[in-house]
Image (cartoon, rainbow, N blue to C red; front, side, top):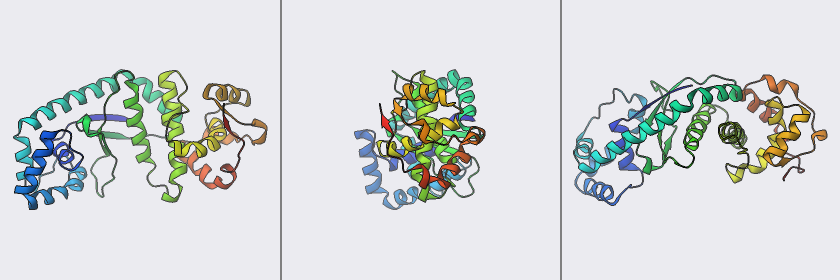
Length: 279
């Protein structure tokens, strides 16, 4: 997986206009534009798909709204801060890139291609993984604050969003199973390896039950022997009775997408045991 981090004026302005206001000044600017250019403002909203389809070559049919925003000092300041934010994420990525790629290859076992990360102002708290018809490149819009006490969190979040995007073709009726497995792979196992401590009790609480049901098979996927499963259980503070499970040797040889398929095909068997507990 190769990531390229970019700041694009049209992507940044669109999100400033149509996401929650990041400041009182931006809120007032949006109100002023709405009062004076209501038609143009509405038309700008429709630009999102066209921008994401081919951000490099996007030319608005009417650029009046974009031009007004670009000429403000507030936008100039936000763009400068976004460029700094982009450089900060890039530095975190570059400093950990070798480890990230190695661990993801070991956990996912399938290739993720090149992604363009269109960085927006971090105060927007935005992630957009929308797949647009006829999209020229794989892109993700990303703008979340960096936790300076744990800079790895931003990379885990970014990787999680990309892997979720890579599983988009799986039928929606299985989305909870898919989300649970992607959490196990990225928010839990990948994060554990980056932080050198267990991160298995993190993620969406709504998925806890499903994740704990899948957990024994997840350890088989990771290639853990029965002896090693005990070590994992102690590490992650999740307990189950090993003897109640048939050891599925083939799981250690499949990739994450095939593991998801296995869990979907066997979901009535897997999501039924009530004997798992958090230690």
